[in-house]
Amino acid sequence: MTKRLITPLSGRVFFFLNACLLLESSLTHCFTNKSRKKVMAEEETELSDKQKKEIAKWFLLNAPAGEIQYVAKDLKSVLNNDDVYDEAASEAFPVYNKSHMICLEMPGRFGDVLVTSYGELQGNEYLDPKTAQVAIVDHVKQVCTEVRPASDEELPTPYVEEYRCALEAEMLKYVGEAYPKGSCSVYCINGKDVEGPGYDFELVAVISAARLSPQNFCTGSWQSIWKIECKDDIQVLELKGKFQVGAHYFEEGNVQLDAKHECRDSTMFQSPDDSAIAIASLIRHHETEYLASLEASYLNLPDATFKDLRRKLPVTRTLFPWHSTSQFSLTREISKELGIGK
Amino acid sequence: MEAAMGLMRRMPPRHSETALSALLSLLPHNSSDLLSQVDLPLQVLSDDDSGKRFILCEYNRDADSYRSPWSNKYHPRLEDAPYPSSKLRQLEIEANDIFTVYCDQYYEGGISSVYMWEDDNEGFVACFLVKKDGSKTGQGRRGYLEEGTWDAIHVIEVGPEEETTRYCLTSTVMLSLTTDDVSSGTFSLSGSIRRQMNMNLPVADGHLCNMGKMIEEMEGKLRNSLDQVYFGKTREMVCTLRPPSEVLPMRLPDS
Image 1: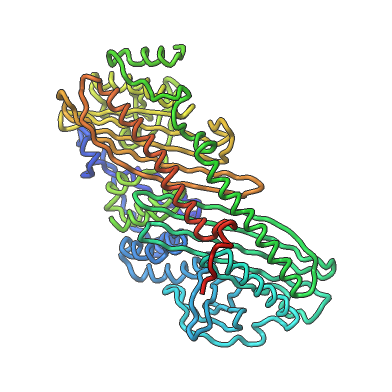
Image 2: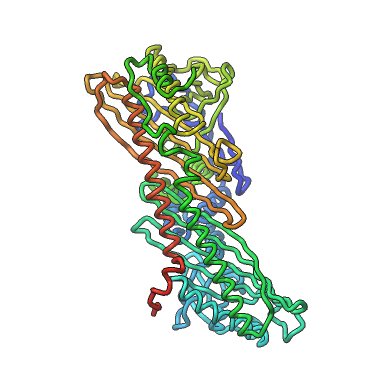
């Protein structure tokens, strides 16, 4: 008999076999009457290539930040089918790279480019607004293979560019100070053809930082996405920030942190330089506040939150009284000791 | 198989059920190894006779039925199923009663179950399980947790009874907690760790006493480990990514 398990993600049905229990593993050799354990009919569940590909994609997409190459290696081994793997990889890697906003080095001393959906021009071309270059990227290998200058159509107008550039300069200053190894870019995501005052446009500032320490079994990532709507009519800049922080520690276990937060703010629409300074300082303020609340969550953990799962010691503040005169009166003795009415 | 376990160590712990079923469908011939080596959050069933709940695991399962430690019956009913001997069943009953009290003390609620069976070496194996739902809609008394579960599985192999008997404990704790509030957003920590402990203890003290003490010690250690090492490490990582502002003025500019 098979039990079907519907996965929330893909809606596909994975067959979960209730397998035969004649097992060789260390613990279950202890089963007596091994032969009496019912043998489940092992149905022929040869998955189609398409199903295997979907499963492979799921594993790749759920890899923690910076670990996709390790997951890829293990996955290839488990799949044992290079064609299916290659197809899954070609579909999964671009999505992963964009959602993690990976940072790649551009050849030719142009610095780094961030791979994000905001800077995506087509397929594997990503704009680096800082240098006005377009990077051509190999997603599966996670490298930038070549660079070309951006065309005028791909860049914003000089009017928008003034704001974008000023903000980017302020952001670079901030990120340089606050993040030991962070990268940031500012893109125009709406209204890049706006010629002058009188129309709205929208910028987005993204910050991406990642720390990989596989030899210490620890990895982490931080992403901030700040959308800035420049509302010309009411002369206001509306900010919407989204944070995503992740960490993974996997020595003798697997523990992961996943934290998210959103916030909003607004400020006056001023000259490019003044707006940039105002925006950057708001961003700095909110990010610092968020970090402080993460710290508070961690400090609160041992006392309040963890206690709801398991106390460090019982209310009596002593270890549990296991001692007893005889095994069969253990319960009575213990209840008496703890003063529990029975 | 090693690659499969490698994948399990990297997938988000809250998706371990999905990851396991994916691996089972990719590697049907390794299903027995996978099922025994990968721990999933514990499931619970209600005993028809007493209305009490009991925990489901490989150790009280036969085919698709599970044996309740309260009534000693399989749910759903099963013919020709294995049961512990009457002597062992007595011990099992006592163990369940005591363990319930222990859980109440440490977990302030929660569900517990103990299963025992004879092994081939004239000893026996006991499996102690705990499941606690600490969320504010569950049994979380302080109401901090949006979602929180602690699942513990302790399997003890007890050697043949001599003056000093050997006890081998393998413990796994699976933990998941989420807090959610307006000012700090969603904060979610989840994970699992597994440890082993072997001891030689005088049988005169009683099996339950010996096993109980080992479990208590192990749970304490795992709880501390999770708290200090694991959560501590992830916190350290966050501070490395973006150090708190007090640290900043002292930093020299990066070249």
